Structure formats: C-alpha cells, structure tokens
Image 1 (cartoon, one colour):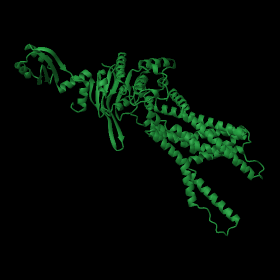
Image 2: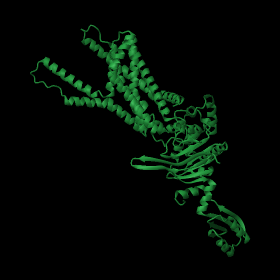
Image 3: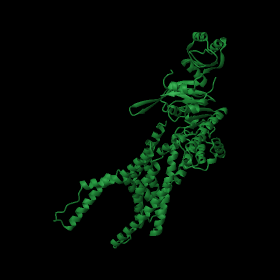
Length: 311
Length: 317
C-alpha cells in the first residue's frame, strides 16, 4: 500500500465533502436542534428546582446540558454517518468516476482507505464544529462555566461520537458497495438507521406494555399500596425494556456517554482522567460493542470491494 | 522478432448471474505488436470491455494468462496501469470540478511531479482541444467534450500504450476526424493504441491490426491486409473489368475455361469475374491477348465492414 496515494484520496475526499451543502446543512441542523432543545431543558431544570426547594444544592445544570447533548447526538450521529457513507462507492460507480480512478495505478484498498479516512476527518470536523458552537451558545445563554472538567468530558464525547458515527458510516459503506444505484443505497441505509433508532424502541415499548399491563385497582387498596404497586410495575416495565433494548447500538452509545457524564465535575484533571477511565472501563462492553459495530462492516467492506467484479 | 505490447493466452472469464453462467471471454489469445493501431471490433456485449478490463487488472480472468508491456496481467497490474492510458467505457468525471482540477487528481494518482503537472495539463488540454474551456465545470461540458477530457486523462501520463474503449461515442464527425488524426500522430511517436469499438465506419480504416470478437470469442485476428487476403481466399477473388467495344464470345469462353474462375457476369460494358484463387495475371493476359480495350481492371477488395458483418452473420468460418 502506498501512503501517498491514500493521502491523495483523503485530501480529495475531505475537500470534496467540505464543499458539499450537506456538510453545512448537518452543522446547522445540529446547532438548531441543540439550542432549541436546550431551551426546553432549561425550563425543565427551573421546574425541577422549584419542585424540590428542600434540596441543599441546586441540580447540576451541566449534567442537564450533557443529557440534552446526548439526546441530540443519539439522533443525529447515525445520520451523519449515513450521509457520508451511502454514496462512497455506489455514487462513484453511478457517476463513472470509480472507473476513471481505478484505471489509474492505485489499489482498491488504497482508494477505499482514502475515502474512509477522508470521510472520518469530515465527520470529526462536523461533530467538533457543531458541538463547539452549540456549547458556546449554551454557555453564553445559560451561564454554563466551561471548566476543565466539562472540556475534558466534551473531548471524550467527541471521540465516542466520532466512533459511533463511524459505525453508521461503515454500515452505509457496506450497503453502498453492494448497491448498483445510489438511491437504493440511500434508501437501505436510512431504513436501517430508522429501524434501529426509531422503530425498534417503539416495537419494544409496545411489546412490553402489551405483555405487562398496568396494575388494576380493586378499590380496597390504600393510597400507599397503590403507589407502591405502580412503582413496582413501572420498575418492572423499565427493567424489561432495558433488557430488550440493550442489544441496540443507540442504547450502548447512551450508556457509554452517560457513564462519562456522571463523573463528578469538581475534580482535579488527573483525578478526572482516572475517574473517567474507570467509568469507561465499567462500560467496556458498550465500548467494545460500538468498536465492533464500526470495525466489522469496515472489514467486510474492504473484502467485498477488493474482490468485487468491475467489468 | 516482433515486439509485443499485448499477448494473451487462452483467457477465459466466466460470470455467474444467479444460476446462469456467462462465458464473457472464451479462450482469447491475441497478439498486439508494439506501435500499431489495433482494433478490437465487435458488437455490443461481445466481450470487448471485459477483455480490456482483464488486460489492466480491473477484472481477474477465470483462467488463462497474459502480458501487457511485458507485465503479468494478474500479478503486475499496477505496473501495467502506470504505463497504460485507459479511456474506459461509461466513465465520468467529478462534475462540480473544472477539467484542470479533475486532471490534477489523475496526475497525483500517477505520481506526476507537481512542478510538471500544470505544464502537462495545459499541453494535453491543448492537444484535445479543451484549452478554452478550463474555467468551466465538467458538469457544463457536452458529451463530446467529456469524451475529449477522458482522452486527456488517458494521455496525461504520456503512456506507452493506450486502451480506448468506444472512444468516439458521442463525438461529432469533426471530432472523430480530429481523434483519428491524433491517434495517427500518437502511433508515429511510437505508442501502441488499442481501440475497442463497434463503429467500424468511423474507426475501422484507422486500424492496421484488428481482432473481431463475438460472444467472447475471437473470430479472426491479424493485420488488416492479411485478414482481407484470408477473407478473399475463403470467399473468392472478385475482378471488375470495364471495357470499350465488343466482347468476343471466344474471349468469354476462354475466360470461363481458365482454372479457378467460378463465374462471370456481364452488364453493359462491365465484366465481373469471380475466382476461387488469385487469377489476376492470367485474366489480364487473356483479355489483352484479344486486344479488348480496357478502361479499368481492378481486384475488388472487401471492406473491413463487409468482413466484420460476414463474420458476425456467421458466414465466415
């Protein structure tokens, strides 16, 4: 493998992606979504504070900030991956540019690696820029202090987010290698993302609710026992739901981010690094899951693309 | 001994489409000497593109072997592509970029030094007649202009060998003429040009070596003159004689009695004689012996197109 060929494809892919409208549309969408949802988070926070006046300390607003960030990331990251993956090979094939590139002295793995790394840099750029702007706006609007702790967590969230986006990119890349047409590749990739992120949780919730209906009161129960019955039912439903959705990438990603975010903020940097490392180790299964989700389709993509017939 | 640019031996390519097995290339053995214009002629779907793809390593053969510029088509395809300019069929360029930006990418992939790239791009765009369109985006180009840019991308690395798949599709007649002139110029510089086409009228006469391919099989291969001679030996030699004055019966009888003469037809002042061997000299001698005044005496050679069609119809073996 010649690194200069890979570099050529990386820089070409990155500069090509940066010129695309979709890059800026994604950044704009992320910021808009984040700032809008941050407003609702702030309202929830105020209501929460009003409802719990007996608390000695006000709830941690930075935690809510990260929770809000997590919701937006969980929704947008798969689509960032899909957006840059669905036409990597099918698009080049459809436009005929794949033909003109592969008749040059370049190996297919050099081409695909260049494409992948170029897209990876683009995704890092989009995630970093949109998260930085969103955080900046939030900090200015809601007075979040950007201390070392938040910045360190912010950096880790960027890394994990890039990994999660890469997983979706790799899945779409594999689809694009098999698809003859870009439209079909886009359709399949979006369908997979929608099924995994939106439809599967709905199905799970519906199934859990149908198989575990809420308790029916006879009228003879005391208010305390009714409350405990409802609590027991809610906990059971939540437990089953968590078990059933644990195989979804979305759940693993949320679990991983949450484990980092809940680490205390008022720690020295060295302690913070140690604590976040411990938190990540505790979520090692989730991390491994996301890494495998990125690597396996990527390896499959390379194998299929190298062996694929190109008349 | 003739130096060969391409040499293949019993190349076979089998594609599986569901339960169907398609033999796209069937025992193809060809020899392309260096410095010639080689025409790979055949109808659509004959296997021309697959054969070219195998030659540059885009597709691996199911069996058989081959060498291009002395490099093995299976193990050394990168070396082949370093030295070969390829104009593939149904290619495309990045439409949002200018031709110069597209060619810069091709130059980088071919390790052309950066200080030479711009000069080379200018020269090539000049050569293919796109110098005035460097500021346009490729998306604004006509089909013919894109085809010229494709040719420019193939020529950019100054290759020893050019493989051009249907190079004149979409080019207007003026463009075709310019393309033909360019190919002749390139072969004068010592380059070998392989043209795969079904457009015989446009490019057939340009080639000095050809191979006719149908259903993955090479039906005939060799120099154009050799192929014409072989075809005439198989189909017969046709002489067209235009004369003045009266045609004597005795002359006709003597012509009919000559060995090898198959048929004679007369129409006004024209005599068409078909022979199974080359009887030109004997016919001429006999006619002049009878003092018939000749206006024309020609051996009617079949065109490459006629030979091509005859092979495709299965009339020739």
